[in-house]
Image 1 (cartoon, one colour):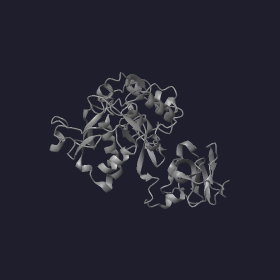
Image 2: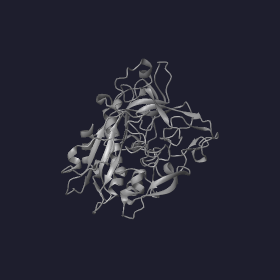
Image 3: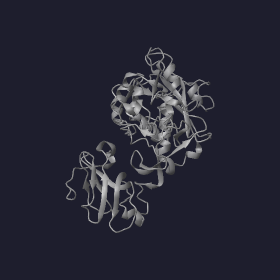
Image 4: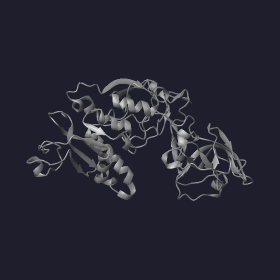
Length: 426
């Protein structure tokens, strides 16, 4: 886990090399065992000393970490140089949790390098006189602390497509250790520094380190995140719903009718919209329905916004799924390149099956500039470039319409293929 984590960070982040050993005092990183040489001659030829343990954690906590000491003088005064990390042994099942546990370790080590409210407020920018966070609002008036440094703001504006952003919101839910030390998950759900671990290290996250002046980052190594990409200012500034109606242009992320099926935002599965009623009325800025007690039931730091939760048995990308006859005759296909697409009446003539509003179709993006789909065993069919509906009546035996997704919504690297010429549906 540690070599994989360090490799991911070392390809993205550089520092000025230290010219002397890192000497670790007996009080640094308490409860962690120190080699005797670290307290005497110090650790040589390193930029950071990290102590790692595998002790039990409470609840669902996968891991935790933090810095223990910073440079006390010089041009890099305040830069973290000693840290500690603990990973719960119950998650150390490499084959089962490989990607998740490495993401968790990257997340925690970024905390130990300085991505935390303590450093934002105090020693991380010690002596620089910078304002790192300011108090503001987001999503219809919810209070939020925001990172306002120049590099972070530039990367976020480009990602969200919102030139009027004044800062990037930190998490406003959760207790000590959660609030203000992570990106707000409502806005950055698939970022590695969101409150629930599992995402990618985005350019915005790398910019936090770059803006300290302690780190040089390689933005070409940033991971791809999609939640909120090009979603615009309304996604950030307005409520997800008002009186039960989703904010126009953000339908990909939020849902309104509890129990209704809807494609998950990444289109890798069919999801189900779910809301519930809470004992107390929600704060006005988190009220999205006419009943002030109603909010998303799968909210998990999502500011009570209702989102479609994936059906476990309807993951379009599950190539091991055994296709039933009902699946086949309603056009569903399950493969690595399958995605959830809104449809109307997709069914094989004479089968007697009930069509779905969402169908798992094989999808590809020739040249990354247009969308093609296949229904059942059909040839590849071009979607209209304007993203409008496409009838499938021309395909032998099939009826119905495919409501083509926008290129920007679906054409990620995994679906891009070389430009090709198709003979069906041109």
